[in-house]
Length: 113
Length: 112
Image 1 (cartoon, chains in turn red, yellow):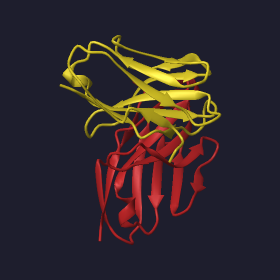
Image 2 (cartoon, chains in turn red, yellow):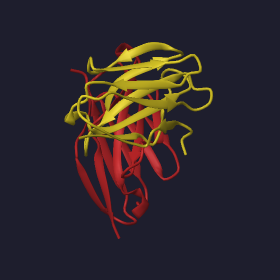
Image 3 (cartoon, helix red, strand yellow):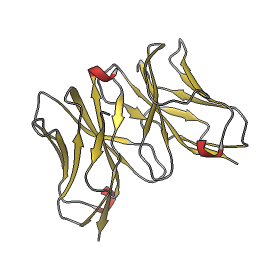
Image 4 (tube, chains in turn green, blue):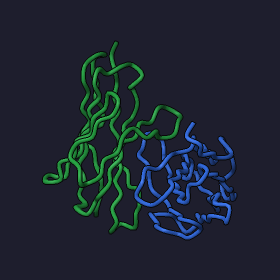
């Protein structure tokens, strides 16, 4: 069925390095994507979003890239800090899925000091 | 603080019982989502309401039901509880359809 998935379950990076978290989606009708960060015991926190009419969007230390040709989404975190350690989820909304916000399986980012 | 309030924060109950989880969305938000998250798992979509009407339904069990009231708060009812229903239950709200959703801190349900 239609799904949003993640390539790597765990990513370990050195403090100060850049992190790249990847996500694949299968619904070609998806038109809105969101990255969330979830720290232990807390609710998911909105990081950044992108609509399908864009291929790149930048925030503070974060960049989301969207490649619709290969249905791939990535989150880049610059100068990764210990506070970035969390599980990161990509999520998708598509009009042909009743506007459901569907989540991928998550990637755990571990930042080594 | 996202502005989405969920109560209670923790709930411990026995198998076979029924519980109600409550969600107050951010002020002005019309859409409410419910998700279930088991230990170290992803977020499983349960159901979505928009301005009082059911908008989308995921793999929600028949033992579970929800509603959104005229004041836009929502309740998730879980009945005939089983051990496997132990999980974090999250509510999220968004101002409109197709916009970012903001999550509450969740209700941790433990069924013993």
